[in-house]
Length: 196
Image (cartoon, rainbow, N blue to C red):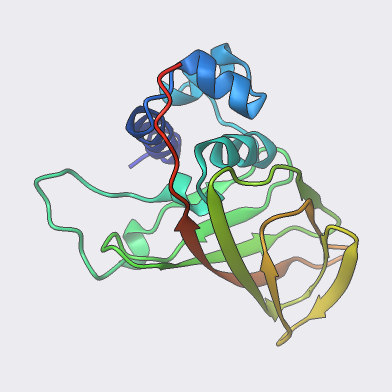
């Protein structure tokens, strides 16, 4: 499936499941109604920053926007073949993420990230109604990662655990690409449905 169509379907599903109108999601996320509409029609290639705002407003991890749940008639597979794993490239920074996790329900999600030399991506949003924990394991290269006021430089083999409840910045300060694995879990807190 085309990655923009997959994102379109997931944003629309998550919005519908919460009973949110386009206007309500726009107000909650800070992303314009027209931009959300384009994304939901698969006519826009949103940046990581825009997807972060939408995921946060929907109370899910960014990885949830790349989940391919298949059709309701199909039983979700416990296997994710490499050819079927959704791959997305951020049009702003060029970083590439591959969703590794199978469609079968699991509290754990795995993401493979290739991050270009010299690039930086900032996630400013804090997810609504979700408690998200993440670990980053460096496979190759180096990354500087800031979580709130704390800063770390990770080299190949290093692992960082964090909770996604503060401003996070990923920066590759080197002249070589970096690659890392992200493992995350999400606990959705009870919330009332909104229809506005």
